[in-house]
Amino acid sequence: MAEVKLVNIKKVYPFSGDEKKKKKFLKKETEKNPETNKPNLQITEEGVVAVQEFNLDIADKEFIVLVGPSGCGKSTTLRMVAGLEEISGGELYIDGKLCNDVAPKDRDIAMVFQNYALYPHMTVYENMAFSLKLKKLPKDEIDKKVREAAEILDITQYLDRKPKALSGGQRQRVAIGRAIVRSPKVLLMDEPLSNLDAKLRNQMRAEIIKLRQRIETTFVYVTHDQVEAMTLGDRIVIMKDGYIQQIGTPQEVFNHPCNLFVAGFIGTPQMNFFDAKLENGKVTVQGHEIELTADQKAAVKDKSGDVVLGVRPVHITLADKGIEAKIDVTELMGSELHLHLDSNGKDVVAVVPTTEIDVDKLHGTHETVHYTFKPELVHLFDKETEKSLL
Image (cartoon, rainbow, N blue to C red):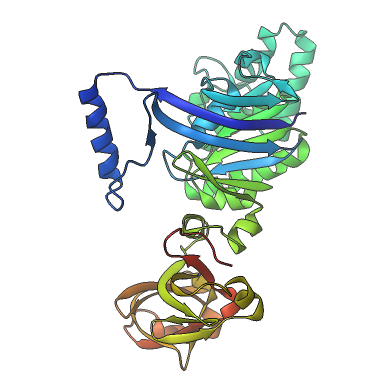
């Protein structure tokens, strides 16, 4: 098993073409981000910077999840660890060995791809045994390893089938099995569940957790789904535009997001954000004054003026008094009622347990309600830097 260390890793895709093409590319990237009128990715004379200043120490047998929106550089980072992308700058160490120029086959890693990448003309057994045959291992040893992996993944009954005769979930298990038969030091997984339906994704998440408990290896997992990140990872690395935004345990990034992006990205439904005014340890939001706790006051003692207040939908409670709002849309989710509220022209989402309200009175109506939230559950962000103040 192995530790993985990435030191100031950088990936630049050289810009191919003349100045005219470069300007056209910049214009296209700028149009994707009209709010700031700047391209999402950094453009230099060398080319397009996809990953910048990436520093991460992954402990032996740790499960690390790289998460972020499409195009943030997470898959590129994974492919650099695998050796499928050249590293433009920085150093990659696997088990203490510098691996920048080591061929992928010599890194003792295995990778599970998004599209399974199984050989269609081979049976499940042959797919799983292929890499071991290339190593010229004895037949009985190959058979033992394949059947052990098949048993772990509960696919023994499919060993004689071709991939086309399997469901999406079964194919993904075969792809994972093909990776683990080699007992790699590091197992890389690039959005392995994105092609599955919601029910199957839930099942496969549980399977991956069980697999992690049964095989002793280091996992690096890439996903854009923050639910997968929260349920699978020992630590989560949240990325945006090629930069790491925050690294922490699922609970740390949920309870203490370091900036507005992380706060909005982690958590379902998304955190509500309000323009607010901070003055003398009190926050005024939509005409409603909130007295901060002693710890919060200490954290913002030198701050005042305009801030952004964030509160998660599950932390909003309906009350007799508070901020007035009108129900726009309701979504009944069994044990919870999701309320989309028009709060002084702002869309606010509240998640309320059905045991605490009269569902028939609120569901499908446009009633006027009042809501509030506890001071200890709010998040405050600097309006300019977007960094957390607490």
